[in-house]
Amino acid sequence: MENRINETIYWTRLSGDAWSLFAAATEKGLLFVGSAGKPFEELSDWAKTRVAGAELVRDDDRLRPYADELRGYLSGERREFSVPLDLRGTAFQEAVWRALREIPYGETRSYSDIAGRVGKPAAARAAGAAIGANPVLIAVPCHRVVGKSGTLTGYRGGLDMKTALLGLERAGVPAGEAVRHA
Image (cartoon, rainbow, N blue to C red; front, side, top):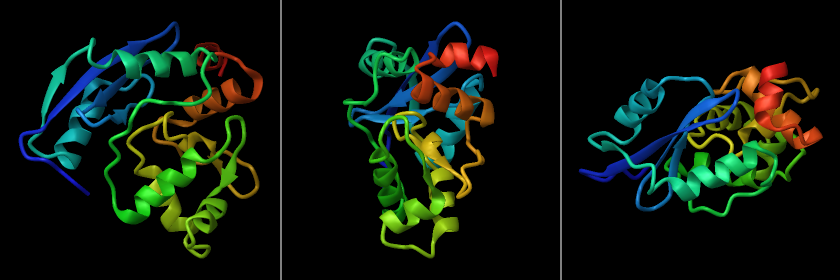
């Protein structure tokens, strides 16, 4: 994991009809996407432990490209992200997060599928831990990982958010509508 001394993390708050979340980026790319409905402390607590000493600065203009892509996804108008990401984890975590980005829109994979994809077929639990540590919800689509039987399993954003995101991808229902009816 790479932390930079005196780093600035820029953040914004995105809101829709039935959802609100925080997003943050560095000069390098999107660093964090929060859980729907969680307070600013989710971001600030994460930053304190993962990017110690960083200054948090609200900058809606700087975050506009990221916010636009997230809004486009949540409204059902975007299927992929083109903005740069600033992912920071162990080599194993980063391999898992790359594997998550390879899951096609509207499809799901199991934890054991992801473990196999990163060359560690016996490490489904470790893959699950890496998935749970994903700081960039939605853009790194950990919501597309389900239990081996297809059941919904844990998600940092909560199962309502996971259900809404999967509903958006499967049925084209904007995430706000899916959250409202979940």
